[in-house]
Length: 352
Image 1 (cartoon, rainbow, N blue to C red):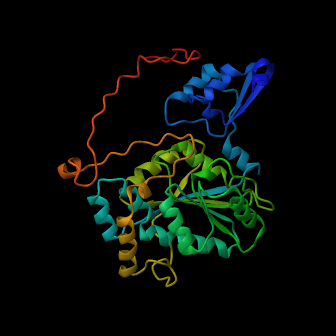
Image 2: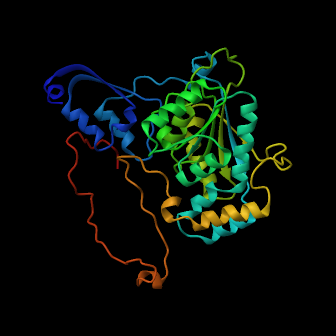
Image 3: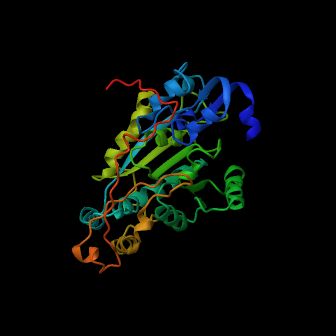
């Protein structure tokens, strides 16, 4: 590291440059000396306002490729994007409206209608010999879906050896056409064989995550005809829940790139298919009981190393605050951070 700091480099190339404005990553610019800095990214977007800091940290944007033009010329796959509306069952929706905790999002992810839609789409595309990735940020839902459907899954604690074995089977084994993954696969996995992606749970309204997940299936497909759809991107949304507003926010970046989303309100034949799980009231009651018995930790999204977990707002009774539920009520004072130290590379260039 000391040797790197002592050298004076001609050019420094930074991939995934949208991460540089973060406090820890931007330290690289003061540690490493370079005459020229070049940043590369497919998703020049952040959910905070720090993306504008790249103007003085790196420099202005020099070139932006048109995604649809790349698609027409065959450099990337031709993708059909679809939003599938999954109605909440009456029992799940009643609990969704009643609960005020993080379990709202778990109820949304474990919606039996969403489970059946996922199973339906997997069976449909496996019959076409497609390679399918199913994403879920919620680990409880990820495990339940994968185990119930007898599919391999990868998430944070999965060992490196097991990951490699699953990915090798996905790439080379014709009998393994579907894998379930958490947010660990947002950026670090290279799966050019995949041509179908299904989202059952995601990180709020993150536009960057939506675009990066689309990138998992954007590799040009061998022997594909440029005029026909050869990749499919599905977002499963529980109807009349907060997921619908999150979905609109997530789509903004891709819509600005020229993509359009097809809304599917009903999958043909899904109601009459006897082989789908959770068709009966008894099965739905069982899965609802599992969700209600889950802990608050199960309801949270997976947190990656180095990622700051967001806060959770909970409404409790006075008896809970007095210790009846093994909870402790405490108050903390937090000073304003507006007058705190600023990074030396920071320049005040925004109009206020």
